[in-house]
Image 1 (cartoon, rainbow, N blue to C red):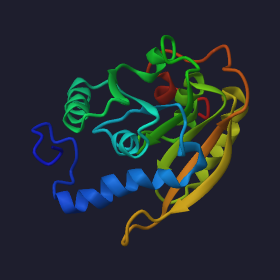
Image 2 (cartoon, one colour):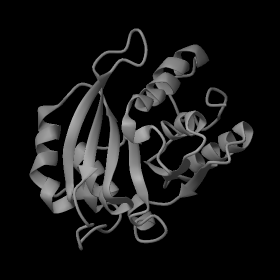
Image 3 (cartoon, rainbow, N blue to C red):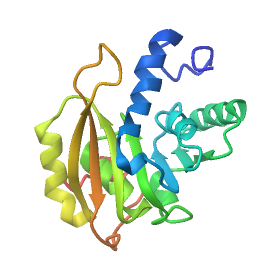
Image 4 (tube, rainbow, N blue to C red):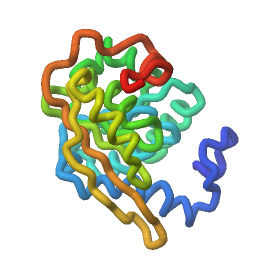
Length: 206
């Protein structure tokens, strides 16, 4: 479905390569205890449905809300969910900031994000969606000291703290893949969520 979709949601068109680049990479998250069997997960900026769709297949007892603000991406995810008959997954067309002001506020023990934004931005977006003690799991490539330092500098303002970094190798030729687990350390700060788009345009980290 991804290879034939006219919207070209991925540059990886060879299904055999996509199994590695998208499917196995998404499933690498199953090594984490946070994704063992939570009751609910929100996938921020789900795009073409990664990692949310593969994780929903692997964890049928968990409810997955895949959110994205781009209509064509949400329509594609909807089609995949129907085709795969996944009763535990749904696509929601919204901004994460708006979702955090409505049904999604402090509703999830786990948030996931893959290739979406810098860590500090992701932590800001995830914080109002997570329950106290919940975790953001972010798929990243090679470790970047500046990215990690930016998160550390704003962690207290977001009630988010880096818990650990787990190196993974989801497929044979993959290199420098890391999963960042960022823990929510208290109630959602009063100023979160900010207006949609502000986390990227004016990050607290500067």
